[in-house]
Image (cartoon, rainbow, N blue to C red; front, side):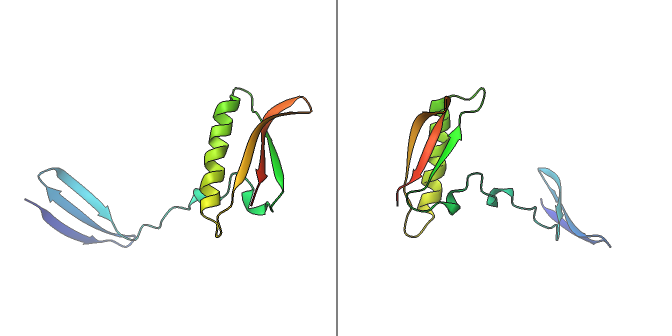
Length: 106
């Protein structure tokens, strides 16, 4: 059996729900948290066709995993653009530093 109780407090309003599963408190008007996902990890939005970006391999990471992660990031970002953007990724050794270079194709 479910029972609902409304409580109006100075700070916030809450509902207390009693059910066979237990007691639940539902808070009203709690602001949403800031969305940290909106900040871009990689600067793809600044790249024009023909531009490239080199990302060095970090200590403890492996090149295949890094390239897979970047491939997914470029694919996800590119599909959100109109028209769709495409990128090319390659393992590289530049100035004796291993990493992945990303080119914006179109």
